[in-house]
Length: 99
Image: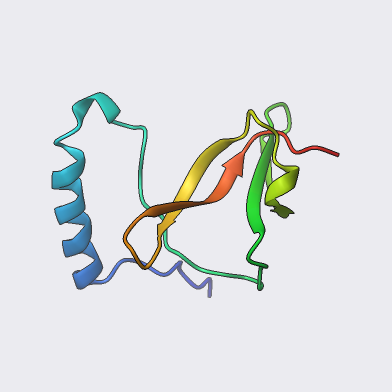
């Protein structure tokens, strides 16, 4: 039998409902932001971020860890976490990395 993906529990759904009310205060940003579950598949260094590069023809996206210094100046921040001071810190970028 196929195992279903982990779904939101009651507490998480309540939090999403609260966050949705905040999103509704910014109608001009509708559809620009969402939520994701913070998780890790491997350890990363302090100077590393995730870089997403997409192949639109193949409909594939590849996410790889990169040193912050390898990010192209056109890379776009796409995912953030809050640091201990409550400030958003980018963890994932979409775009080109230097070779």
